[in-house]
Length: 385
Image (tube, rainbow, N blue to C red):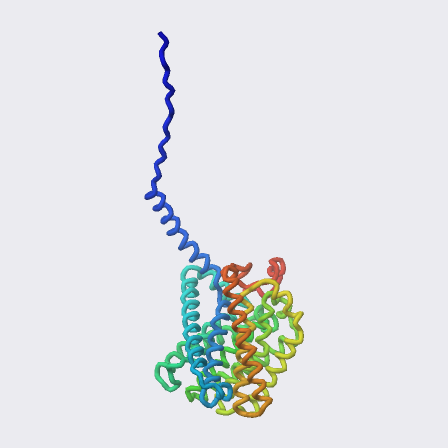
């Protein structure tokens, strides 16, 4: 009798352990968050404060334009400019606080990188930027008066870092052989001048005329020295990266800020203020007539593009003050042109930044600043400490 063999089929049971897999995903996400944060902290540098510089200077422009004695908004009866100013100021405040918080974390977790930036011939200049932004934010504040105790206290909190960096930076130009101005000078060196002039305007707004004159003279003397040094194309100018060429707009930002500061010190837009305004206007036209200078730097989005915005805003601020003093059609036309250009460039760079946000957090070869090739860096005296 034949035996019947019944085929046995193997049954495979798949157990889906959703609980364990979800735990693994949560663990991976938990590890990913610190990694992303560390990546952001290692990528950010003081040059990112160009963004808050533009926002804060734009808020100051809107505050001056909507003032009762300003001719720019006299024909408007709408509350829209006031709403736009308040929205812009709070956006500038949020941006400044966020950048300061991130940079403070970087000082804690990546102190060596901060120290390296402090010794970098370009990076050290942008360490003034947080103080400049805070001073501009204070001067444009809608809820504080210059004669209040809080205003004066905050002025010293934001102004002391400027004086400390002045002692370090200007002192080494006088005394340290490997870091003479003729070697270290680059267009970003003018950020230190702008810091002194913005602080001078803040002191003048509080009525501290002697303090304002001290800061103004310190800034203007060094501006003349830096301007002549860069004008002569000494060795420092040959080591400035192509990517950072938008920083050339600082050439007219410094005299424009000086004109604004002198207007606050004297109380009116006098001859010296007009001369500084015309100088900044001439340098602006000279740069605009040479678009090929910026062609290579515009090929790829970079945070340095924000350097187009705040110098134009300072020039627009001067044009508003000039129109208030002169009160003719030419002055009003200049005010309208530069205010419109400033707002349009600001909005354009903001939209480009939002569209290229993934490119912002990207560490450049050295300190987040685009620099010369490594072989040139090794042979350059600019990297000597």
